[in-house]
Image (cartoon, rainbow, N blue to C red; front, side, top):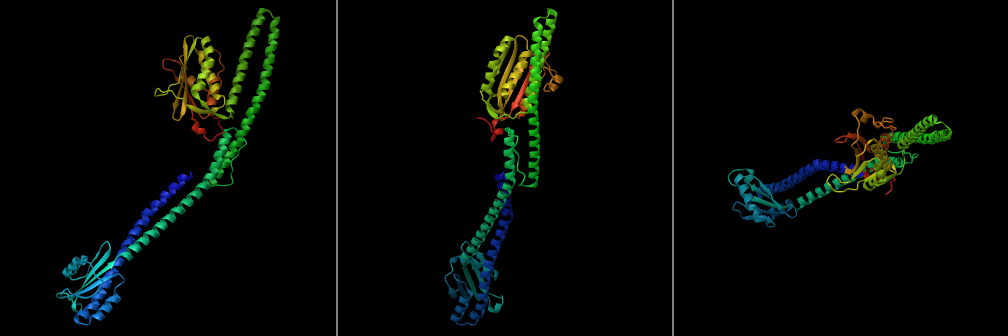
Length: 463
């Protein structure tokens, strides 16, 4: 953020300087040139006025030379010509470049000037008693080097460069100060959020600095963290209570029924077998509810998982079960372009195993002999996609809409209806998404999208 704010403010300041200071500098340069030429033209004009009397009255050259010396600057080169274009008095030796300026002044009968790369040239006709009649009685030719003009322009650009540099430095200082003022509380809140995601429920964000909006956001974050801590601790307490209050009586009830079966007649024994089946189903239901509760209150450490070997290990573990049901398990680890990929995702420890176990158990349970389950892993948009497709009876659109809800079982074989609910809770708690679709040719396809490891950079993840 600091770099973005710095670059934005520097770009804005540069645009303002380019749009305002440079045109002003160009105008100042033009003004300096005009002032320089005006001064040279005024010098030539004053010498022409002095020369009118001197040439007309044929006064001595020393007096005229003194007047010329007083009027000219250091470095000026001046020559005064009479009507016959003979030098009357001169200071220095003007170059030949003044010839066309003199011709222009002679043709127009007025002052002519030119600014070259290294000097200013001015030619001023001298008239008898100032009357512009007939031919001029002389010509003043002044050449003034533009060194002082170049120095003034250089000093102007140097001043503007220093001014622009100072403005950019001030803008950078303001941007860095403002960015740090905003970024510090954001960085602390980001750190607190990452630690909260890692399972540290006691972490809180600081609320004593930064803009009012960020202080309010930090306060809201702390309120959310506090409520989350209360909910998670409540879930954990509920898990302990359920484990103790339900599992122990169920085990005791099963033991009592086993004892009753020993001396029971066949008819009663059959009823007791049915009761044991219901107890077993109730035990599975309790285990499923506990698993969902754990998924909803998940605070496990985030670990980096290579999907391809992890999925291959679970498929291998389920292969004997699939063989016993006459179901074929197929894996596809090829990416979209046909090349094998090893997508890496960040998940809670043990979550991928729970997800695959529930999906494979559901798929095998609904398939008949010669059924097939295909598990596909591919990279997708910086993350990974895990697909489990079967060719079983599938689900209707209404059943798919409710499939991730608890007890919404589409299994006609007496399932608890918790498998897909557990999968959904585990996937979404890790920042992923889960959706259902029809398998081409018939069946159900579960599509799970997981974020890549870059989403969890800086969290307490194992490598």
